[in-house]
Length: 406
Image (cartoon, rainbow, N blue to C red; front, side, top):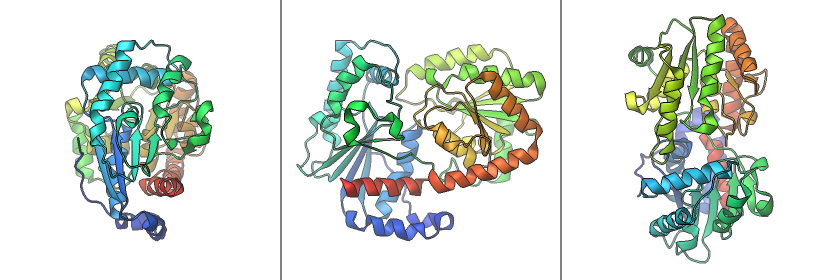
């Protein structure tokens, strides 16, 4: 399924990145007219879809003929690929021969979306990875597999078989060097993903909209707010987020917790964890669930983040964690576990705090709640870190460099 997108221009970012606009245009000149295809699992929900929604139009704006396709598949397929997601991050789960066959069959059926005349194909994450086995392209076509999860300690049994789907890729792109699987390092490159400062999720908002949104969601603007933005996924450990909130509440009784998420179409397991987390939260009215089920879209997430006192992230494994950059860009300090890409976004003691232990996380949140000047200083540093390293124009530049070097 081809994803329809609005036009965007690199010029829209000139006020943010200044002379970098010209450098990006110059870098893109040798790629002008090249045919580039991006493929992922879903057009909605999760960080990959959010990135592509804005990255693809920007590639077009610098002269590259770029399209984005989301695969079509039954729910059974996504149950299997969720197992891939978990096992490739280390979970000990078995995948049956029937499930492997289903995965390959669906990828084969979706291979027809690849343009035979494409110059570059970028396949995102495990779900469509096997398409490379079945797609027909010209010999000069360059294939990239963009992995958005942590592959540093995979389930070896699953990895050894899954790796066969990757043998014909020219390059594999990861968020961090430490994610490179040891047996394919020679074909790996690393650069982080990005947020779009001009998207609905990050753009400046009208005060009236922000206040009305929080009022509708029953979030009290006069009380401190901890916000967790994460999918309902076992690796996000939202149970620990609730535990941390409860520890903070013993010291700051007025605190509220917003758990913000989107129910993605490629994650059936998310509904199971959604129910588990709701049960764990119990009847506490100060734990507010904000999802697309109650009308929370990108602009509403933006509003909630802007009014947050502190952003909390309790994931035990994390590919990158774009929600960290989203909060920092809005001048909100982050308290998080130092896993995956979180470590390169949050500078401990400068724009937030890092700790594995739940008691330490709670102590850091209490410290920030009690010191408005500290929150302000950390917020300013966080925004600067994101603008310099983790916005979409940096991501575009990194893709252009990867394409040119292949």
